[in-house]
Every structure is written in C-alpha cells, then in structure tokens.
Length: 430
Ligand code: CMC
Image (cartoon, rainbow, N blue to C red; front, side, top):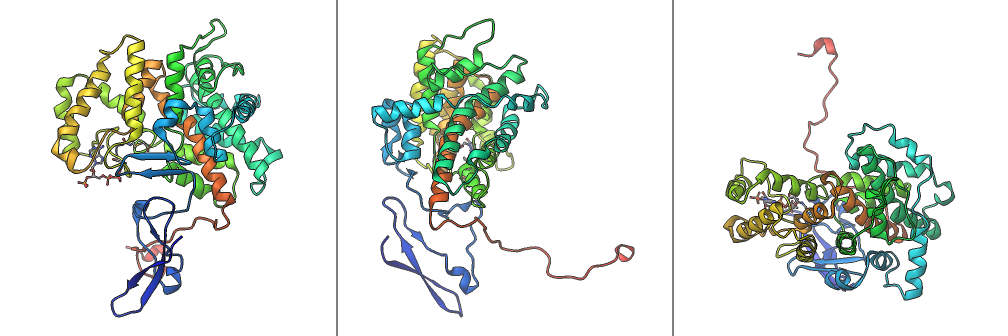
C-alpha cells in the first residue's frame, strides 16, 4: 500500500499528516479516515474526488479509455466470452473452466422462475406503468420470499441470493413488458441461453413460438456484457450504501434499480432514442447542438459525456460495431435514427464545445439503436441495463459485506442552514 504521506496545513493551526494509499493500478488516494478527530471533514459533492471503498472487481482508466474486469479488458471479454462467463468472472474472480461454466450455467437456468405469488403483485399496477417502476417494486418484493437465505453474514446465503437475482431479474423485466402490453406472461425456457431465454420471455406468446435470430441473441448478450459492471457508479454506490446497514440483498438491488432509472445514468439509453426521434432529420442536428451548448438551456445531448471517461468510452466503440452488425443483418443500414446518430456523433466530435469539455459518445449512445433493431420497445431499454448490471451490483455488494474494513455508510455535511433559534408560538408568528 506504500508509505507516502500527505499534509494538510490549516492556516493558523496545526499540520495534519495523512497516509497516501496505492492500489495495484490507478490514482493513489489520501486516507482521510482520521481527519474527523481533528474536527475536519472533506467536502466533495457528487464524490468527484472521493474513493468510497477499495475494490478488486473493475478498473477504469478514464483518460486512456480502459475498462478491465478482474484484469481482463472489456474488448476481449466482449469478443470471446458470453455473459454467463462474465458473471462468473465478476462474482467468483476468475473465468470459469468448462466444468465450472456448465455448473454455473445450470444453476442460473434453474433459478429463472419466480414464485407464483409474485404474479399477483403485477395486477396492482396500472397497465401503462413504466417497466422500471414495476421492477423497483417487484425486485424489492422478492425480499419477502427467501427466509432460507436471509443471513447476509453467511457467504452461502449471499451466493444463493446472487444466483436468484441473476436468474430472476430478466424474468421480472419480461413480465413487466408483458403486463404493460396486456399479454400473458411467458414462462422461462431452461433449454435456452440467458439472452435467448430473455427474448423468448419477451416475444413468445401462447399462440406463437418465438425463434430467436442468433445475430440478435449475440447482440443482446454483448449488451449484457458491456453493462455488467462499472466500478463505483451511482447505482452501484447506492447498492453498497443500502447494503452497508446489513439489509436484505433484494432490497439493495431494488435501490440500485431506482438509482439506475434516472436519465443521467441508465435512463440515458431511453433518453437517447427519444432525442433521436425528436431530432427527426439530420438537417435539424445543428439546432440541437446549439441547444446543448446554451448555458441557459438545461438540454443536454443524451448519450454524450461521462464522469470518468474523458477520451472515449471503450464500451461505446464496441456498441458501435454491434450496431453495424445488427443493422447489416437486418439490411437496415440506412435506418433513419442510425443515420441521425452517425451524423450527430460526427458533428459533435468536431465541435469546439464538445472537444474542450471532453464530451464523447458513451455506451448508451448506440445501445438504444441496437435494442430498437432487436425489437425491444424504448420503455424497456433501462430495464435491460438493470438486467445486465445486476451481476455488478450483487458482486460489489458481496465484496462490501466480506470487507473487514466495512462500516455503515454515513457521510457528513457542510451545514449552511439557520443557526439555533427559539420556537415562536403560531399566534406570534408574522
Ligand atoms: N451535453 C451538453 N453538455 C454537457 C453534456 C452533454 N451531454 N454533458 C456534460 N456537459 C457539460 C456540462 O454542462 C458542464 O459544462 P460546464 O463545465 O460549462 O458547466 C460540463 O460538460 C461538465 O458536465 P458535468 O455535468 O459537470 O459532468 P458530470 O461528470 O457531473 O456528468 C454525465 C456526467 C454523464 C451525467 C453528463 O455528461 C450527462 O448528463 N450526460 C448525458 C446523460 C448520459 O448520457 N448519461 C449516461 C452516462 S454513461 C452510462 C451510465 O453510466 O449510466
């Protein structure tokens, strides 16, 4: 961990010595844990410069556009692995052997069904409820079902919760879609792969079998891989914070789904598609670019910018390739929205504002176009992100619980409200 020191000198006061910790890669961090003893806290809204934990799972170098899961580059995983292997890698720390993969795959396939009582929750929702609203509630409701594995201090209980979540979140997502469209639920089919099974649950009906196209299955599997984990992003930090009190894992993942839903995070893929529809024609792009640059206008180019990536998002490059593959397969390369996206990317990458602020297309810029080509309706895009990120959330949650340094998350604040004052009876208030 190194033995460098950092010093804080308070004007007219003492000098405080703080250890500097080094990881295996990435920026060093100043260990400020003892600062509170000196009556001082750090101030960092949005945690822009704060490492909230130590982690062995995912490494990002935002300047170089590097994303590694347990050391493996995302490009290699997206090219050579499938989502089930990536889940194994994230949760257990190693790529599986053939036998381990078969066993893990078997376990996940045999946890896909939800308790039949779960179906009755759906009936309480309006038919037009957003699938993410339904998922927050129904995934949270799973916490009422598994009394056999509720001890979060037991690694085996945590493991079975992880298996259940990886297997059941796609089932719940597909049920949310079926309910939304007034169709009967489709039971999972354990003979199918993870991605093919999801497409089956989305699109098969009692009257018609759905035969998944292998190119679409591979594209969806790649979307799952590219969204699987992303170190301490908003939803993952939410899961860690919720879990830091020792609460139930299903409740923690429901909290992660809630955080993911926002347009600044996982909701961006849905927002990108809506934006492309609104632009409508390449001729209108300059008007939208001007709106995005106008300080007085809250509009942002959705799918552009990232807190960590300041050169390029490696996931966006891979998603762009997938987009080409899928549209080629469908013979839809002249797809109107894809053409608008390409032109928008070209103009934004040449524009001084976007260059100076280091705003590049992120993973969600292209994922919406791929999902739309697969036939997924726009309001399901963020639900698909939630399916993919469940493995990241549950792995990070497990790592947190196993960490001997783990404490309940409890940030401090810089108070800027009124000083102490006396109560005034209502009859005397002006
Ligand atoms: N369009 C126009 N201007 C932008 C954009 C954008 N998409 N993103 C950032 N900016 C500007 C922003 O106005 C600010 O300008 P100034 O310095 O003059 O005030 C500057 O760039 C820095 O922005 P910020 O909001 O301080 O940066 P952040 O790190 O807090 O936010 C972000 C990162 C991803 C929330 C933001 O870039 C954004 O809102 N992008 C659009 C939404 C989006 O695509 N989100 C998906 C992120 S990737 C998938 C995921 O992780 O969920």
